[in-house]
Amino acid sequence: MRNSRALATTTLLAFSTLCAFAQDAATPEAINTFVQTYAAPTAKLEKIPRWEYPVCPTTVGLAPNYAKFINDRVKKVAADIGAPVDPDPNCNSNIDIVFTTTPQALMDGIRQKNPVYLGYYDSSSQADALAKVVHPIQSWYTTETRDVRGKPMIDSRNTRTTSTAVGSGSVSSTGSHLTDGLRSAFYHAVIVADPGKLDFEMGAIADQIAMLALSQPASRNTCYGLPSIANLTTPNCGKPQPALTKSDAAYLTGLYKINLGGALRGQRDAIAFQMRSALASN
Image 1 (spheres, helix red, strand yellow):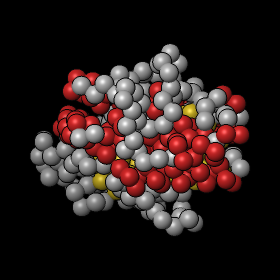
Image 2 (cartoon, rainbow, N blue to C red; image 1 turned 180 degrees about the vertical axis):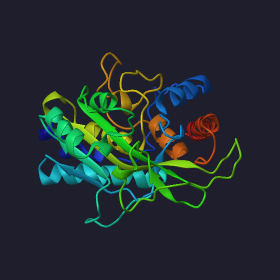
Image 3 (cartoon, rainbow, N blue to C red; image 1 turned 135 degrees about the vertical axis):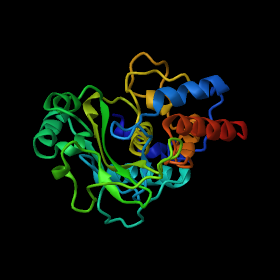
Image 4 (tube, rainbow, N blue to C red; image 1 turned 90 degrees about the horizontal axis):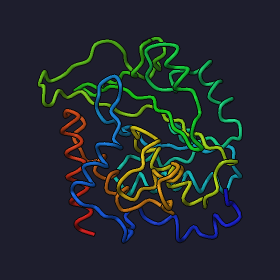
């Protein structure tokens, strides 16, 4: 991780998510493929989640100036694409960003003490698999289901693991197959980075973390057809992007505009439509 030059390039790398790169080949087919391969539905409801709680990132394991840089970048990206942001610098963190050279030990601890932070699983073997660290930057998401009245319930096979701040029990829906009113949302995210395996500018690292903090990818082993910061640490995906691309910004903006109560296919179509509109105007 090239910390020595990180803040010196802040003015170039911490710019708005609406920045454009000439090499974005955003054909309708490429956009549809990007959405289909990137957007991950929740295991419980099979809908695409996003933040409804105000975003509050906390970074640990770095010097205070670098930690602040990453926190500020996540909040800046969130504000730019229309996600809710908690302006309080002392807010209760719902995005834990941890830099550590022993990421597996960290996740083993979470597996033992706070397994709900791994995400949804149906068995102990699935939880063990979820806890495995296989990427230099990796993310885990706790999601929740909200009904038409906004009542939330954490997506967990064991309701005893749900927070006292989150409801449990039955949920209310519209009864429609097209728009049942039930929606998926993020409750908590954990993003772990191993600095010993990162040889990128801090701006690029911060932007990949922002992408992961605000959206859930279906796979970290996919090389996306559109230029994307999501490919930063994925092997054999060509030259890494130095920052969020306009395709990334268009995807995130679309995600935070769609009707969360719709069916998965409709959600993906809506994100693709928003992406086509945003990229055509740039």
